[in-house]
Length: 604
Figure (spheres, rainbow, N blue to C red):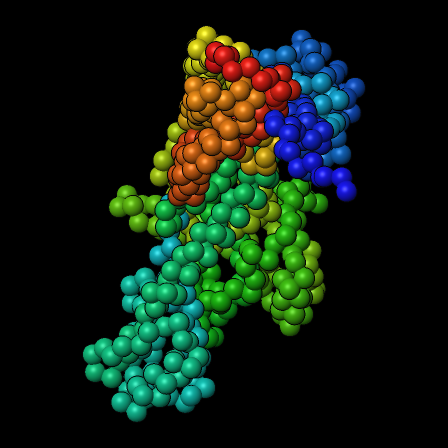
């Protein structure tokens, strides 16, 4: 019987491992190459809001203004005019505005300069953060007190109806402050009855005894927290929709703290338009016009300051509007064409069918801050029209002002009305020149650190040092490739600091391995045995060190924001690529070259 050979082959990798290594590095290299080419300045023409000009028409207009574009690319949803420099962007936008006649459709942008075959494969440059590309940052404060007040007002209105249903005479509900309702009741029996009713029907409200038989209703703390979170989240979604309507790409919209939103708009050179839309809280509502003494009503002024009495509860709010377009009406005045969702269309259809021949008012509301820093709501009636026939999900309103005002209102309505007023409390602008200087300085530091490290490793560890240098270069390629591939990954100035730190961590992995190999050779083992034992014994130490640092990176990314997240992202990705190249790639090279070396007097 033949004896089975169980002798283990030292320093041997299967062929599939080399295939995985080569394919991985190749893909990451292809992903990193577009970043080397950078980006070209461009102007985008959106398809929304009008006919798309042909490339021939664009070329003709630009030629009249002595502008020679690199290329004009027409896509299904937009046309891109790629330029030679950022200096041409403003002139190109002004020239194209004479052709498009709607500045909202024109957006300054940056387009990848990499060859089309790379772009067709889905590879794009690394997205740069605000501090590297330049742009504008807003910090918004969401006034959740107004939301609490609206809920309190709604409760007050509902209780008045409930009092009539419960046949409680003399009961009144009034607002008290921003988030409380005081219920004035005629007797202790009514107090007990209403308290029980509120526990069953309005469990989110806490009822406490006030003076006499009165009750004071206040939102429970859990309900306040839930409302605040929901309000901020809804405002986040609305902000993202508004930024998309503006055509701004690579924007970052994130929550900061309990009730603040931070917006970063890289590449935006003129923040005025973005500021007007982001900070605006305009919305529409439609009200039935009432006579005095006909139920619960309120008075709103029209454009001339004249009072208009309308129902306190709107027929329809702006949250049902799914599309809005500005245009000129039959008599030449600006108008906004409204499209409602299915539920909004049904509500408008039911109301208009029952009120043909009666007036309906369109209210325009917005929020602002007064001198004391308090949020103030301004409502005005922009039109009062008699309902001629049953309306559906499509109709038009007039009285919005000039065509520019109508276009601005249409943009806000398309992007959605905010659930709570917001105020811009901080605005920072970083010019593209400063961003370019940050890139230059940051990558100069990266190049210097990497150059010194490569030299040290080559001199100190001789032949193995060159292996570590190859692994380090592969590490940088993989790190840049990952940053370009991961959706939402943005490179910031602190992120470049993370890249520099990654250089040190990457060679640290090899330093630990090489020192263990030296120790094994001193113990009298052959070079091949030292390599096998060195990698095996160093793995635990390397894994523990990188794992603990990864915990820090994850925590930083989770609780940090902006630049801190940028640093945490590159740090975390750098740890992964350092482990891969320092252990797997360098071992693969060493196995091929010295994996069978039985010498015992090798100097490492």
